[in-house]
Image 1 (tube, rainbow, N blue to C red):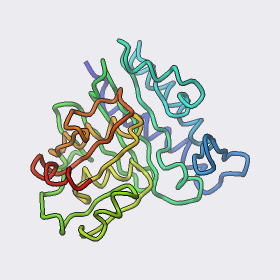
Image 2: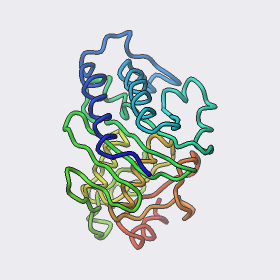
Image 3: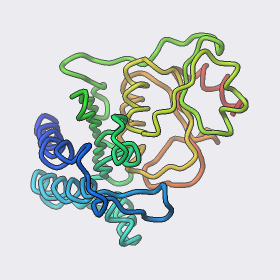
Image 4: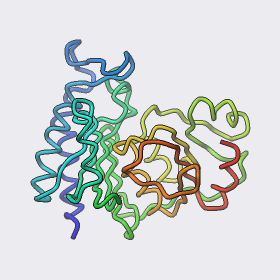
Length: 256
C-alpha cells in the first residue's frame, strides 16, 4: 500500500513553508555555493529542505530510503538505491535553484516514490503560487480535487513547448510559443495543466523527472524515451519526449 497522499502533500508544503520560503530573497552570500560549475548552485534552502523531507518521508513509510539531489552530489553510490528492493523517495528539494538563488519565482519542490524501479506516486509543489499537483499510478493527476488533463492535440504551428537549445534552433520558428522556465518542476506543472503541449529533455536525473513523467501519463499524455522505450527513473542517459498523445509523439519525434 502507498502512504496517504494527503500526508505526503502536508509534509511537502510544511517543509516549503518552514525551510524554503523564509530563505527566498533573503539568502546571504555564504548560503549560496557552486557545485560542479558556476551556474550549478546549491543553497541552504536546498540542503535543509532535503534533510527535513528525508526525515519526515522515511518516518511516514518505514523501511524506505532516499535518493536526493544533494545527497547524490556528495555520495554517488546513493543513486544505486533506485535498483534495490526498498521503496525510494526521490527528492529535488528546490528544483530551479538558480532561479531561487537570484530571486526568480520559477522553482518548485519535486517528490516521487519509486518501488522496484517504477514510479508509483509523485508530488510537485510551487511554494510561491501555492499550487500542488499529485498523482498515483493508475489513479490520475490531481490539483485541489480536480482531475487534470494534458493539452488537446493541435497542429505543430499551434503548439507551445519547452525545449533545449538545440531543439529551439530546429523548432523555435515552427511552433506557436516557446517557454523557458529553467525548472523541470515548472515545466511539468505547465504540461500537466494543459498550458504546454510538449517537452523534450536530454539529461534525465530522476529527481527532475520521475514524478513529472508519472503525472504526465496520469493526465492522459503520451511519453517515451527517444528510442520509443518507456521512461524508467533508474536511467539517466538518453532523452525523453512528452506529448499530448501517441500521434503527436510520432509526429514530433523525427523533428527533435
